[in-house]
Amino acid sequence: MVALSTAAELKSLALRAGEELEGASAVEILTWADEQFGSSWAVASSMADAVVPSLAAAVRPGVDILFLDTGYHFPETIGTRDAVAATLPVNVRSITAQQSVEQQDVSFGPRLYERNPDQCCALRKVMPLRKALKEYTAWASGLRRDEAATRAGAKVVEWDDGRGMVKLNPIAAWTQDDVDRYIAENGILQNPLLFDGYGSIGCAPCTRRIKPGEDARAGRWSGLNKIECGIH
Image (tube, rainbow, N blue to C red; front, side, top):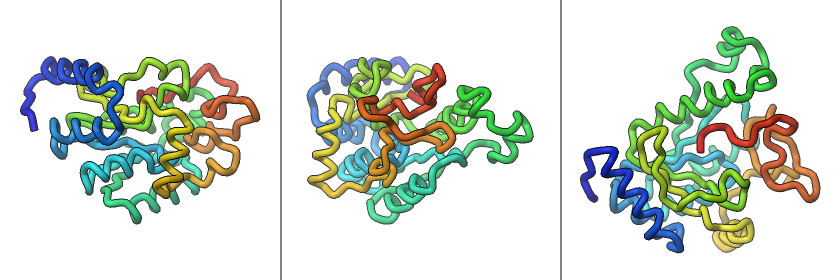
């Protein structure tokens, strides 16, 4: 494990790795992170599937998996979280917002997600994740380039300037076919909603089934000028 004491050194390391590890396998990318940071890295998972948690567990059994429990999730998503915790050698941590949904309703009014979805995402996802990640030097996500135009330029290793840490996108170069193949070959857990017309799974009030021909994320914040929650 390399001791890096400054943000400038970490940033330089991340930018260099983003170039050098392009074309590497997901396990190779996560192995690099483990060699660099030891236990000081974690995975953030929406529990749409257990692809990245399973890859991370293969590299570091007992790795922390951060799940943002917003209070608005589908029961199927909570069930997937519990199944991942029960069947994989990982440590699932459920991260909650400072306020419960009921407390938020008192402070900001009911259904904030309808009136100001960006603020709701900030309160229930962005800020809680930022706080949780302060314990780590690097974090990994399941972000893929083919999911949306906003993600097309993602590197397999990046510098997360907003949080001052290394960001790992080990399956950034994977296609949906790659994901499907990995799931089928390895018996990976999937959220049941993926078999019920949902392409991308977020909070229940802001997620709908997709229509034929729509991209996977079309069901997120449908009808609003919003395509990201602000985490990535």
